[in-house]
Length: 101
Figure 1 (tube, rainbow, N blue to C red):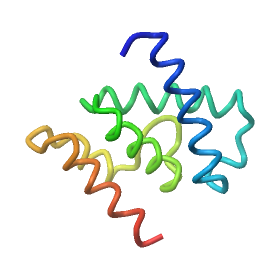
Figure 2 (figure 1 turned 60 degrees about the horizontal axis):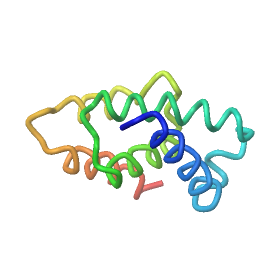
Figure 3 (figure 1 turned 90 degrees about the horizontal axis):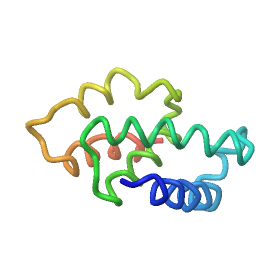
């Protein structure tokens, strides 16, 4: 991801989250949400997620599951660190946790 692309993506995702997960991001003003997304986007990339949809799903899960900006919870980290699985498979496993909420 190039910096300009990341900035545009972050703005797009912030709008998306305000639209589809308003309760999950309600406590964050626009600036705080942008900063938070920047940290979480860096985390997603550090787990080898590079497909736009996988990154989007990671970010959605991070707010639905109330992870901190420091990173995912231990259970999610364990799944995301499993490099023998494709990135989409790892995100699928994390996303399933949100279905019971």
